[in-house]
Amino acid sequence: MSDVVRTQDLWKIYPDGTRALKGAEITVGRGDFLGVMGPSGSGKSTLLHLIGGLDRPTRGEVFLFGKRISTMDEDDLAEFRKGRVAYIFQFYYLLEDFTVLENLILIGEMIGVKEAEKKARRILDFLRLSHRLKHKPHQLSGGEQQRVAIGRALISDPLLILADEPTGNLDMEEGIRIFELFKNLNQTKGITFVVATHNPELRRFFHRVVNLRDGEVVGID
Ligand SMILES: Nc1ncnc2c1ncn2[C@@H]1O[C@H](COP(=O)(O)OP(=O)(O)OP(=O)(O)O)[C@@H](O)[C@H]1O
Ligand SMILES: [Mg+2]
Image (cartoon, rainbow, N blue to C red; front, side, top):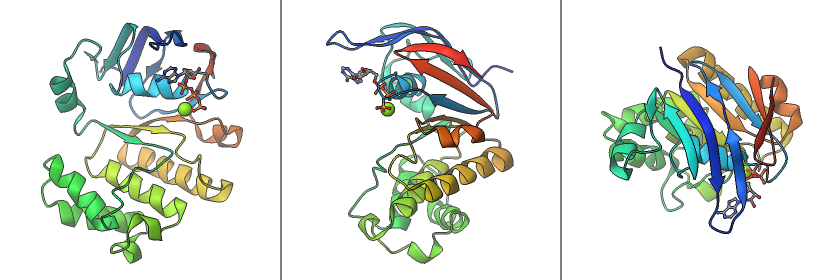
């Protein structure tokens, strides 16, 4: 069976000349819980964007579920990602004018999930948010907002979740709760995770860690 992600000599040079990635090579297997760690500016977000097809490499290849995505056109890529890959970000990017429940249903309907409302309610129950269904995002704590964002990711039944500093805006205690939730999803549903963080206290959660420095992979442990 092919790897979930494989990158080959991956370079990203932004238009202003910044060399954000310099030949990064990583492999992510099925069921992996992989950390991407390194100081600010080391290229963690850039790597996640390229892996998930949100941005294009300057050079090199990304294989997602065995398929070369670096050369796919936008429409094919969007179709290919659907139901396979979901993202979770530091800033939750929820729809502010809609309720918690609607935030999940709207995404579900957009990607053609059957019985989206029923599924949304079930996921929100699992995320301990049943008492917040009618609330708008600004009425929630940071941890609750991030759980809604996780719910939105889960509605598509992704095989791979890419999370970029998902606990960056949370205190340590809430951050650990989010990581425990990820681990639970990893173990019970077999969802593969790639999580970027520069918080060393979260290192212990990962199966493996890719260490980035200045755009280069300096070690995998
Ligand atoms: N759109 C862009 N244009 C130019 N340079 C960029 C752009 N995005 C990121 N960079 C630069 O690329 C390098 C890597 O950035 P990246 O955001 O990947 O780092 P990071 O490891 O995620 O950092 P942080 O921990 O602060 O989120 C940095 O030097 C950054 O300034
Ligand atoms: Mg970043």
